View 1 (cartoon, helix red, strand yellow):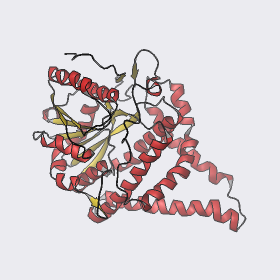
View 2 (view 1 turned 60 degrees about the vertical axis):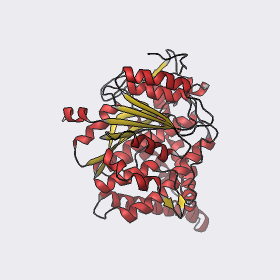
View 3 (view 1 turned 90 degrees about the horizontal axis):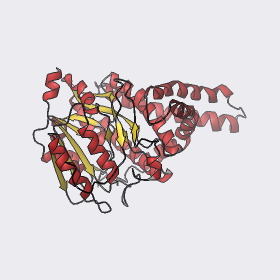
Length: 411
């Protein structure tokens, strides 16, 4: 079976729009350090206006050819992430597996090898990787985001994976059988909602296509570093985009998923849970105190934090050498802040996203990258210049190189 997986043509698709060159080069470098090299890598510059990738391209193309990795680099008029991905699909007709990623994705050295493992099962149509914050040392917002996001992946998404019903693959690292992408390319490019083209939620739509064909699973040993928002405004825009996309995708799941699939019922239960949780919260915190003059018992406030701490223990299973164990432990201790964030701001943004889901524009990166690898906050890792994360599955040490624009091709 390992031989069959090694024979697959694996194509990595990278759409780039106003991305920081440092993150783009770091991601490309990570592809060449893979224990299982990709067969081809396809970069599509989606009409970036504020960024020049000339140095990165001058380094990348000779380096890829020297490593035996086929590559294409296209610059196309701005049409959005989906159209950029489609350009890459059209120039890679031999691909058996497409790995989608973001332009700030940095793969752990065994990410490609690990993300392919579930495809040994013919019914598996897509595989989600595990995303961690590359800039976790930037500030408290990134730390809490990393804690919240990693725990969600290792609890909620892992639970969905157990029954082959992962709802959404994260954009920084996901893999699909090529037919899932090719056979649905037209509808993928022309999705509309309430008469408006949908520009976001591309990853969840590809996951839905995969769900219609078979199993969608997670491979948590396939690790990818990705830049998380460092400013509150950018974080809010990102989460609002996710919630609007989640609402649209929920309607499509109810309409298109067969009722005999676990994904259909997991989706229904999630909505039921969200509505009941909102009702109970309003009753306990507003109705009981102000209408009946009954204050909720303290245990009602303590128990959710204890549950969150218990679930958050999985965060400590990600062993990173770019931060001390003490740093990760203190991040885990910040779990109450993540819970309060989820109860307040994120809950409001979820409902706001539901009622404004018809606003289908992307909403970010119009004026350049929000996070830069060359910015002081992103380069706060201690010397040497490589920040490392130990993979708990094989104890290998992926490296996150800081960007240095080459004056000439390196190969």
